[in-house]
Length: 439
Image (cartoon, rainbow, N blue to C red; front, side, top):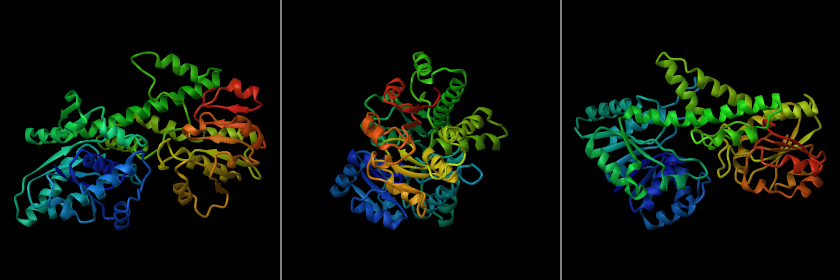
């Protein structure tokens, strides 16, 4: 098929690249000329495993085209995906300004019948608004092209986005037009050997499915962090509690790890947007408000432990940070706990040395001109003369470190572990003070 994907962020770039991998001709559109130029030269705007090689291969083959010319893509395409960002606005709602501008542009430029798919995460009812915007522009032009709206939410996890795209758990198609549904099934057929993975529903239910999924996962994380905080008060071990809870087949182990809070581009903004959706409709979502509150508080749990150990004034103290991205496998630092932790420590007077395998460049931009933070090229170099090691992101290279090396380099043999990675009894025998979440 011939496809246009508007937006070359995480969702758009991964989606377009994976469609091209299956032999489709894909036009990836973005208004950022520098980004398009970089993509043509094989320079990625994000880090995502396997993505770079697939982009270069399919671009060189000619079936993955990067351009700023929306008209060119639309003129040659059967299906157009809207995959632009929907960031959190100042009031907590999803900012749909770019989505609506894209809809207007589609109405101004489309030159034949078209299937228009929202891949961006959008509140319930957005598909109807896009439909009206496009139709208004067509009416202005005096043309009568037929178009069908589809909601096809993405369920990509940063760090495994290519794998998730190529082997989806499910493909939700929000449409009530049989011909359109069949075309979407044909497009996704190479990814879905088991056709039971297609879930067909109306557009509004598809839009809600994405928000409900992310909110459920965020709720599990905040619930377990709440349990962890209770465990600390009563002398229980959340690591053992997790095993007891997760062994129940009705619950399972996924998203039951206690830690220093969730971040990223999805959970924070989607929980907030779903709260606002409920409020606008006249309902106050009490559970989701608490999910958000627990997560915000969880991001300072490690800071509180450090202050309890060293006092409120951390002047003349230096701390090492392992991990800056909000999760391993990505360089994304949006809403990352590391940002909150670093800012709080610096506010108390501390100096920071930080290391992350992929997110250094992003972090340097976030903390530019801040003299209280230094970025290092090695997880061991950050430890020199440090008063304590703080583990924020559970990258694989942090899971089995040389504890003798850590012991020799740290000024104070103290580890604050925001991901509960190590065996406390082992670290006790090695002479470390070891602080975890929920233990």
